[in-house]
Each structure stands twice: as structure tokens, then as C-alpha cells.
Image (cartoon, rainbow, N blue to C red; front, side):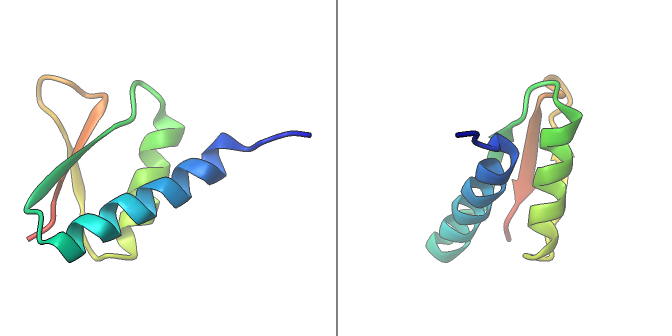
Amino acid sequence: MDINMYDKFNTIIDKFVGDHIIRGTKEISIITGDSQKMKDIVNHTIKDYDITGREDWFNPGKIILDLT
């Protein structure tokens, strides 16, 4: 049996962002590390919420999302 962690990551990000929007959180961070694939998944997932992310200036492995 195989598991595709990229698919799991998409589901986790979707739930994480949605939950924080409902709670009224103003800003969240998602750690992607150096993986461009993970960054692409985050950016693709947050398009559904009509928000954009930006890399942390000091840590390019972290995407910051403004939820307001």
C-alpha cells in the first residue's frame, strides 16, 4: 500500500486555512521547507479562498497568509 503525502498535505492545508478563517484569525504561517512542490500545493489550495501567500523574508521555507 502506498500513500501520497502531497494529496494528504492538500487536505490538511485546506482544513487548516478554512478553520482559521472561521475563527477570525488574521494571519497564519505554513511551513513548507525548501520544497517547491509543497509551496505550489499551498498556493493552489489558497486560491479557493481568494487569498495569497508570501514567503517570510527571513525564512523562505515559511509562507505567511493574511486572512483579513
